Amino acid sequence: MTLVYANEALTKSTGIHDFSNRNIKSLIPENRVGTLQILLGKARRDNREIRYRAEGLIGGEDRELILRYHPETHTFYAVLLRESCKPSIENRDALTGLPARASFLERGEQLFHHAKRHQTGIAIVFMDLNGFKPINDTYGHKAGDVVLKLVAQRLQTTIRKTDALARYGGDEFVLALSDLKAGIHASLGVRRLMKAVSEPIDIGNRQVSVSGSFGISIYPQDATDLPTLIRYADEAMYQAKTRGLGYAFFSTPETSLPSS
Image 1: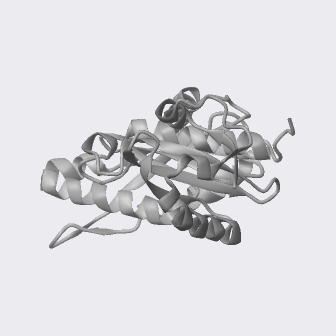
Image 2: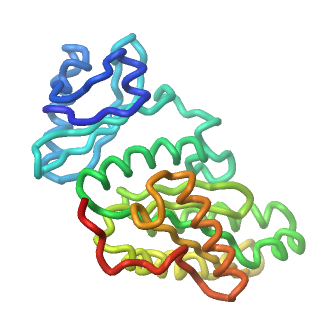
């Protein structure tokens, strides 16, 4: 149960600055180790991340720890959520329940480390809704809220558990599609998102439809930091919208990712 990485929040909480080869059990109270071992066993078998409610994690706070197993190296990396396990209004969009910007940036930190270690790519996707304003103006804000909540649900159910999604503001959403073998593969995921968003929406006694304009930037091809990639994806989305396209890449996507 060896750690190879821990994020800044975990470092600050524990006061430990170097997590290299540190056993995960050293962070957990003794009476919780058994539960953790069961969850880690599931992470190994299913090759997926787990969320662990770290009761009494160093300092006595109840915090949530995200752990992911790397089968190639038989190690784990850990990300401690900055807030306590209690739901936080600041970390969630009040209308859709999606993570807010700050939580998306925290999740991006985790995804970027994973991509760098495994030489995979990440697509940052910026989406803006088409046709939302007329619905909001014609049928009222309640109808607009129904549309936004349903679009958020559709996006969430279309992406994988290893991806990330947040409401960026208004009728804009941002996503991170992880574990890409080539930048061009992002278009496959975006096409699925386009289809999900464009399905008719029932707002009571009538149906309405919206569509999405998607902009895509690629890590590490376009940039290696999340704020820049979000800005590039936003620029690409504007190009898609002005040209009447469903989606556009910030730059020509590569058919394979360069090895580091």
